[in-house]
Length: 595
Image 1 (tube, helix red, strand yellow):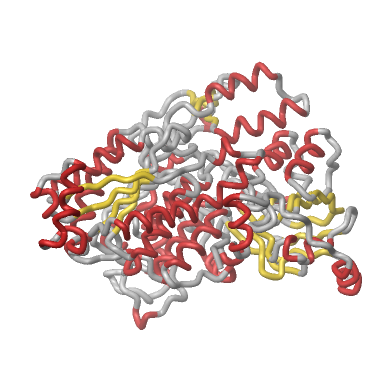
Image 2: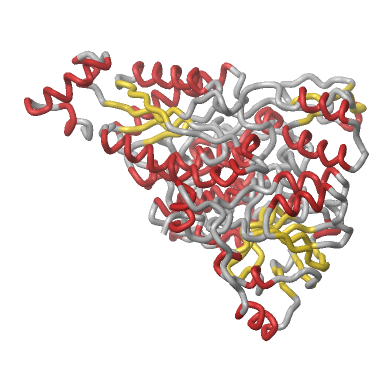
């Protein structure tokens, strides 16, 4: 066992003595030692209950003959860190989480590890650590929050409702809300469309339970993709946090890690090139957060693989958007759960393989190792010890209004698109499934801001006009530093009813809760002296999402002249972790990993 280097033999008597000081018996020390990375805290709604999840994991490990050894790691709530200095630290926490787990698992050589995250940067940070360590590992998240009920608009007529199998069909349906409803309410109040009293009612009702915020925002996007890539058990992405089924799943995860150890199935075996393609396929079908691009690239980097941005457009062109989930759609994670969850989505995509070509056999194995022409590779191994094809054998769609068939998608292309052009030579990302049809093509004058705060002030003071293209720069990985999320300005735009008239582009990023023509991750970033740093107030910017292009309509000669006079701004943070981070981090196009 890997742990023998710290516990076996005469020379390790001092080590065993220290383990006994913790309370471990000789029998427990002799067993496989299973690390549990617990990110529980009292700061994040998605993490407040993780101690309960961890207790269930421990029970499963003990049932299967292992010894659980729990340790802690940090977590940041992006919603609470939003729109102030704290957001500089959110993305940067991903690297700290990965590093801290590596440190714990090397200093205390576990035989295997269980990862217990739930929210935005914690999930990818833990998966990065798993790929880096490459010892048997499994991820069990805390699960999604249930949506709230809008107290201002309680019911919807029955004819607008969909009936889920396993749920009663009622004469009326409650109007669901979530965290994004609160952000958008702020914009509605600022524009006079809602009273402060109505906003407070929404504020009090939008987040009614523990769990990761109820829509397909970044946390739930990553939890669903953890299941799709094979690192989480079926149900990991969608079983709601308050459900007892989540506790049972945690016990199963504890038992499953012992089987993974027994069979020496490691993360790099699971997170193969084909598995990343599967994850991207599910990403496109669901309409996940743009942040998944950053995180999948970072996880792949740790696994020794690359996920080129061009691959996203390639897969998006083949995989239709079949689930309409908040923020861009009507449904929430609990609806996806009742409709069959991620396994049902995989089944829909996998069945299309056999309908369109014969590139896979009945066991889901690729014929001639070809990777082009099908939607899901069913031969990929998962933490169940079975392949994707075996896992989804009995899965089925229980509500075709939530998970639509391939023949009747919400959009013919997948949820994300990567745009290229002179202002984004290395690419930028948009959640095209959440963009209104009239904004898929747009040209307008640039309104240039060198910080999120300056842009937000302009939006809130009603100085942004229809047709404008808001440019927020010096918010990239190095320039931010930390590539802050822009949920406050985008939600204000939506709340004011301008998301069908105004675009926003930035070298920063967006919350998974963002909707509208919000284009982020512009690479190279402005802090690198890129074309973005040369944009001036009033310049025309042309956006064409269908052709995957974005252009600053200024001549090359003029851009060159402006850049010759460019002076690199002073760093916004000059001490501490973020100062070191800014010096080490690479561009968003590389996943914002350390050089």
